[in-house]
Length: 194
Image 1 (cartoon, rainbow, N blue to C red):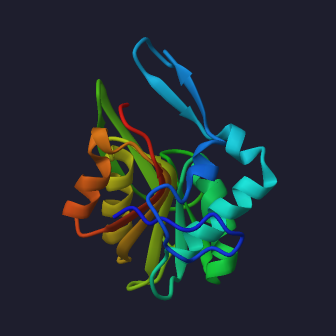
Image 2: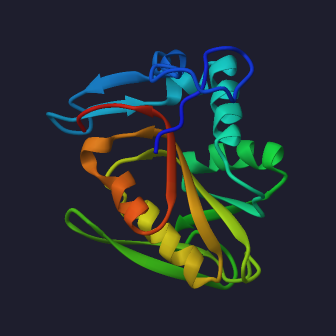
């Protein structure tokens, strides 16, 4: 489900399907990057806009259900959203990183790429069993990394029932796959295509 909010400064009221057009207008589209045929959704232009970034965080926080113990951000842009969301949610921040980037004991999860595999990791002692974790990233596309992060968090004993994204690319099916995994998915903005 994509959650939408009104364009007024106060987040939280649902008004229409175009409620987040103010944020969508702050995201630049770069054609043919990183390869021909791809429309790259560049959120750095939204991040440069203080009001736009603040509104994004407020609306994402408002779309979160129930108490949260930790906000898990996926490297690297997910860290920005996780850290910013943790404060209004009164939660800690858990970093999900590429394997080999964290000191100390870690647990890891492999996931498939188009041509090969990759691995993400978190500290083995990052959460207590039963911790309520919100997964956050800037964008959901095919869902490979997000699904691996959910498996990793659940393997560590977390309860993961929600995921928040700034942008959803629904044609690539990632949000649907997360929903099939029992996760309530919310995104502020949706772009057609890839």
